[in-house]
Structures are given as C-alpha cells and as structure tokens.
Amino acid sequence: MPDHTISDRALHILQTIFGYPSFRGQQADIVQHVAQGGDALVLMPTGGGKSLCYQIPALLRDGVGVVVSPLIALMQDQVDALAEVGVRAAFLNSTQSFDEAMQTERRVRRGEIDLVYVAPERLMTSRCLELLESSKIALFAIDEAHCVSQWGHDFRPEYMKLSVLHERFPDVPRIALTATADPQTRAEIAHNLQLDDAPQFVSSFDRPNIRYQIVEKMNARKQVLDFIRDEHPGDAGIVYCLSRKKVEETAEFLNANGIPALPYHAGMDMQVRSANQARFLREEALVMVATIAFGMGIDKPDVRFVAHLDLPKSIEGYYQETGRAGRDGAPADAWMAYGLQDVVQQRRMIDESEAGDTYKRIQTAKLDAMLGLCETLNCRRVRLLDYFGQPSGPCGNCDICISPPVSFDGTVKMQKLLSSIYRVEQRFGAGHVIDVLRGVESDKVKQWRHDKLSTFGVGSDASEAEWRAIVRQAIALGLIEVDHDSYGALKLTDQARPVLRGEQKVQLREYQKPARQKRQAVKPKGYVESELSRTEQAIFEKLRWWRVETARKHNVPAYVIFHDATMREIAKAKPGSLNDLRNISGVGEKKLETYGEEIVAVIAGMS
View (cartoon, rainbow, N blue to C red):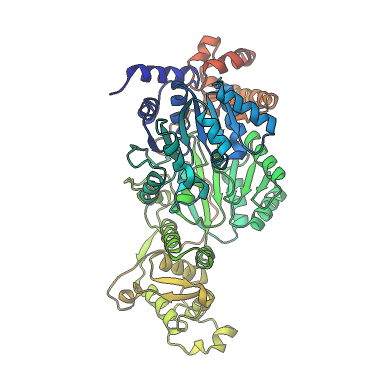
C-alpha cells in the first residue's frame, strides 16, 4: 500500500530542495518503493532523472545513502552539486589524503552525511565494509549497473562482488540504476546483484530531442569539422574516436581550424586528463575529443552534439554515448561517419581478442545489430528502440525520416558481387573484389589473371563508392563476412546461396553521393522549444555571464549553479522578488537563499 505520508514528504523534498514542481514518469513510484524499504532495478535514459530516484529516498530514510559509482573523477562534482542544494554529501576514494578519508569516515559514523559516494574497489575493502556495518545505512544505490554484466558494453569485474551487499546488509534496500541495458543485460544485472525478486522500473528509451544522423565516411575529420561549423558553432560537444592516436590528431586538427578542442584518453597523464575533463565541465563552447574512456556519468546538460568518427562496438555503447547529448531536453545531434573499413576493423578486433568463443559470439551479434542500424532503410529511432524491446513509430527526427533513402531491387547487383567473391575463391578483400567487378586492370588483378574471369567488368556501371556501399549492406544483411585469418578476405555465408540461385530478392539503398548539407529546421516530436523574445534573450545572456562568474568563485561547473532551462524560465518570468523566483523550476530553497537576491538584482538592472 502506498504510504501517503512518504509521498507527501518526497514531493516536499523535490520542490524545496531540488526546486522541481513535480516528479516525472516513474520517479514517484520508484522513490516511494525504495523509501519504504524495497529493492529496485531502474532503467532510465540519460537525463531522465535517475539520481533523484536514490537521492530522495536517502533523505527520507534514517542513515546515510551509499552510492556505488565507478566514476572517481566525477565524485567531487556530484558532491558539489548536492552541496549547492543543501544536501550533506561526501565521497571516499583514492584521491583523498588519509586525514581527509578519516574525517569523512567519522562523519559517516556520526550520521552527519546524507549521501556518500564510494568506488566499488573501495567498498569491497574490509575497512570500508566495517565502517558501513558500524553505521546506520539508509540504502545502497548501485549506479551504472550495466557494469556488472558480461553481456553489457562496459563490464567491470569488481562489480561482480557487489552481491555481498545483499548478504551482509539484508535489511538495507538496494537500487541498481542504468541508462542502457537490453533484455539479456537486464536479466544478468538482476541475477548478479541478487535482485531477481525486485521490481524492474523500465522507462522509455526514447530521447526525442536527439536527431540521429549517419553519413558515409569520406574524409572523417573534414566531415566533422564541416558538421560543427555548419550546425554547432560555439556549442559544447563530444567527438569519439577509436584510437588514442586519432584522438590526439583530431583535437589538433579542430584547434588548427578554429574549434577549441581538448583530447582525452586513458594513455594520457592522469593530471592532464583530469584537467581537461574539469575544463570541459566548467567552460562553455569546448569540444572534447575522446576514446570511450570518457563520458560515463558526465552530467553536463548542455552538450549539443555527440559525433562518432568510428563505428561503436554495439547499440548499447552507441546509445550510452549519444545519450550524453541534450540532457537538458533541448535539441541535440548524434552524428556519425561510417564506412566499410569500420566494419573490417571491428571484426578484426573481435577475432583477435583473447576472449572465449561465447564472448566473441556475443560481440559479433552486437556488432551485427549496430551494422543493421547503420544500413537500415527505415527510421533509425524505430530500429534503436526495437533493440531495447520498445515498439515505436517513425520519429520525424532522424536523417532517414527527414530525407528518406530511395530503395531498389538490388538482387542482380548483389548476385554480381557474390559471384565475384566466389570466382576469386573467397581469398581477397573488398578492394580487389571491387576492382574485378569494375574491370580495373590493376597489377594485382592481372597477376592473379582475374581479368580473365567471367565477372570481370560486370559491375563497370557503378562507381567504387557505390560498390563499397553494396558490400557494407551485404555484410549487414549477413550474406558475406570478413575473414581475418585470410587478411580480410570476403567470404560467402550460407545465406548467400538463395540469393545467388535467384530464390530470394534483395532490397538495397540507392547510393547517394555525400553532400554537405545545412541543418534542416525540423523540430523533434515531444520537444517544446522555449521561444525567447529579444528582451528575454538579453536577460538570458546576462544571466549566463553572471553564472560563469559565480561558478568560477564557487569552483563548480556552471550547470551546478543553474541549468540553461532554469535560466530561460527566469528570463521569461522576469522575477521582481524572491517570492516570484521561488515558483521557477530548478530553484530550491537553498539556491533561492544563496543566489536569489543577486538574480533579482540582475533582472532589475536590465529594466
């Protein structure tokens, strides 16, 4: 039975401390359930408000809420953000001195902290477990819970040990949270954390404010430069690359072309890496160029784009990384340049991995799903959500919905490709096969006498780029595969036989030469843009400058002071008193007390 006293207190905390008028989606049910002592598994998209699902129950229950997080580099910012709204928070991790850790431990024992953030490695030490056993614990929140799953995209062995929480603290509620988990990963999270009997709260995976766009890779660095210049000048964004070297080179290239950019990867000096992350969080209009070592838990709400210069390994990884854009609900872009070499490279990485056959099969299946998303003829969002088991309709806010591709009966072209692969005895890579198809008399073609084959020149009516697109689609359709034991040779699969025999038709996407396009003014479904008048825009800009200076004084990221969405509401409301300001979403009592008079003065100064 719902406890109305708890629900009333929860709403009061939401409004007075965090400054939000009402709960969103399933937040209220989750808070109620955990506050009453129940366990839960929560799947909620990035920016959906997961943190409140454990922060508010921790404030409602006696004792300290223990948040298990792998994100040591971000704990300070999370603690600072809570301090700004008047919540007593601290962390225990390897960045502290012995004296600092001792002081935090004493405060935990005395019940002087509402929330403490702990890395899983620290939590598993006998010292930390003894500390928790001698303290009053309100709840355990296991953030980034997909790290416990070997099926997931970011497995971390230390998370497997977290089942000890259920064994040593059987009466303390546990809430596991993640933004990304397909049904298989979800089942493994529940099993490994002993949450099999806990209710699962699964929110919509849709982020309607994000526009998905995948383009053919030609010159990826030049393409991403054009994309940023055309569509996101002066915006904060993240560019993901597969290798450390590519990260360094891309950051250098963007800086040389007038786009302020910072590199981030695991091979950098830790101090430099941390300084770059801090700058990205605290400054505006910076682009972070990074490997996937960067990003988990990044709370920056105004990231306007995430660009991939290389193909992600899985849809979960892609969803998690693109979800770092547009956390504030305003329009954002997920852009990717993708080519045949990406497919070959990812296949090679799986094949050369030292992992077991089962893991390789899992990774291959995940990569196949990612290829399917890239090569789909239908709405990308439908394909993306379907992967997570969520049915949906065309979104109107992806490149395929905006500019639908032309499809055609590609059976004959596909038969030509498959026949050519067969005629060269499945021993050669895509470049050679395409040369044979197009009738190119290269030295290699002549050396192997492949200019005498019946398929030589049968595809001369199509360009190399068109054939590469067809090869990619053939791989995505499962008709051919790349064999790295034979230096990337293309091989036919069993599924190719009915196509070769003419028993099965193949529908292909018509090749379109990549063109540089200006952003189309398409408003995503589900997003209501706050139109600001000229006066309101001027107030908003003045508030942004005030926020920059205030954040610098407090040594916190600007969004910790106020999100852009809150400042837009302030600009529209033009509050003339503290009472006027109190009714604006995102302004809690502590922030009203700390910043209220300054904001009212800024508004008055604009009159």
